[in-house]
Image 1 (tube, rainbow, N blue to C red):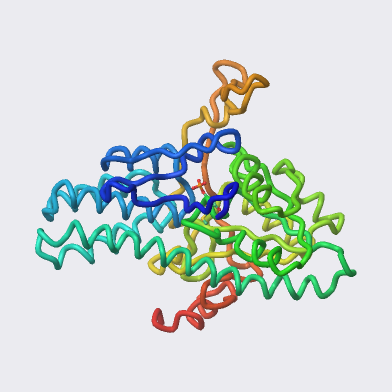
Image 2: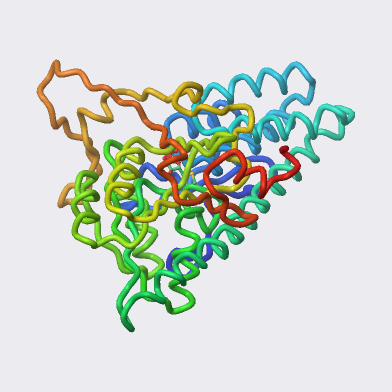
Length: 364
Ligand SMILES: CSC[C@H]1O[C@H](OP(=O)(O)O)[C@H](O)[C@@H]1O
């Protein structure tokens, strides 16, 4: 996506042809920092500590991590050890395991001497596939926005609420939930986005707001707890969010707080859509609440908040008393019954086993 007058992806191969460069998202919106990841350990830290985040981007970063590993030592043992090491970085987004499996399946049939080159090639392919999947999600989601726009008075915007960041920063480019918003804006359909701040890591306030600003999309930052009130007062025409893992029956695991938005949307008759590329579907899992591991992050993310001082320093300050512990589940699961539609690269599926199999018959 364009940042100033330059087009960026969130991750790319460094000119040295071996290491990878990423946008270090911890410093946005105040600083746009690019960092170079030189080895598998640095890739693991970048994923675990959310220098990069977002299910598809986590997967692509891990894929490049496998390529760096293959360049170090292309033996089965080293690749399998790297698989384990990177798979442990974050437990919830299925794209991480999907990408690692994809890389192992690509490399193991090859002679060791051919593995490194193919690994970088495959990682780059996965990155490009992500961009194409997101463009398709954008086109399919645009239909939903167009239909709502047709019910509005001329010039009146389609009011969309989104939670966390499922934008281009969560993927290689375009995003999932934001892709239809970007296409609608480019087509001249008036849209306005309510951006949930998304405590505790504030991906909405710090990342989605930054993205929408950069793309000229009208938006308003709101506290997470305001969404239900806005829906009660007819201020929200639709909700669109991303997902870190969607089950074979359409249960959706996403950033903590998504479930509460879905409940409010159901109670107020507001359409609730989830945008996802098919690698985010975990066909081996049925009941999301019972089966999806929910990442528990450091409670310091709850007891402290990061911001920028007036003199430009990024600081983290405590907001609760010393000694008050925090609980920090990073995701929750929205049951399929609360979801209006799953916007995939192949079209919009009803959130059900049958709905997903209709779009992905090869999974029947
Ligand atoms: C397009 S996936 C985006 C998804 O990932 C985010 O989680 P995190 O920032 O912790 O990686 C959030 O759940 C987004 O909806």
